[in-house]
Length: 304
Ligand code: CP
Image (tube, rainbow, N blue to C red; front, top):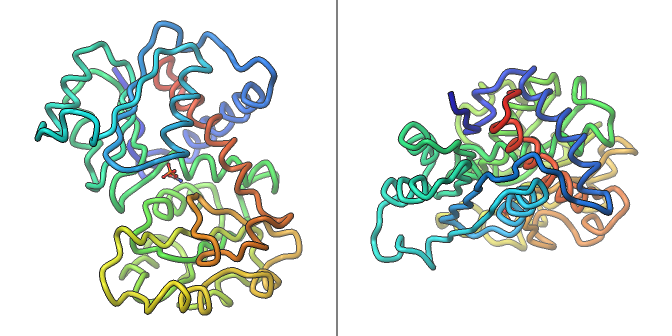
């Protein structure tokens, strides 16, 4: 039976650990001079993106190509979606062309869950609305393991626009399953009601959330999803919730700084933090290729 990766809510701790362990092996390929293995030779990967992307789309494409697959990208603006074709008809059309893995990004939460049972191809959720972004959380966890040796017992502070963030939901599922202590900090207007029921501690300021953290992860302010009045301005946001060098001093001295990207410089993080020696943002991007190689390899050959 085909497998999908729709979210980390559905995976056990052991399944997440298996993917991360395979991704660590794949990272050696990504960092080597010869980025070519035959694992997906003869297979076809289609990236179907209804929202903009730099990191996720490119890394899925490169991951597929590094493993010898045929890979192609479709965005809603340049396809028959712009002529009114529905998501289901589009997915079934691509399925009929011999697609083995359909990587999907869509603004509607749950869109990949609708498509997965309807097509033969394995479906990977590359971000659905405000729901999940599982490969982002996996690449975040791989990067944490590389720097901290493991996830269990880590204190991870996630700061920012929690309300709109699919990244935070996947990270909370993954990190709590693997034994991390997660604190969330941000404006009350950008904090979902009942989020504490996910096993996290919630603060409406940065300072308390960040104290003694091993990992400080800032979330992007999703300007494209904001309704009016959730915060006064990006300048005010940085003043009260931005992570700068003085707020970072509250975390552990060896804390790492992460951000899923794209970063709004001077809004979520100061430029000196982004470019400073605690920042692992570019390493997250490299881990993204490795994680996506591991996920696609395991979808085709088993091992989830
Ligand atoms: N982190 C992330 O999903 O980035 P992109 O939107 O560039 O893919």
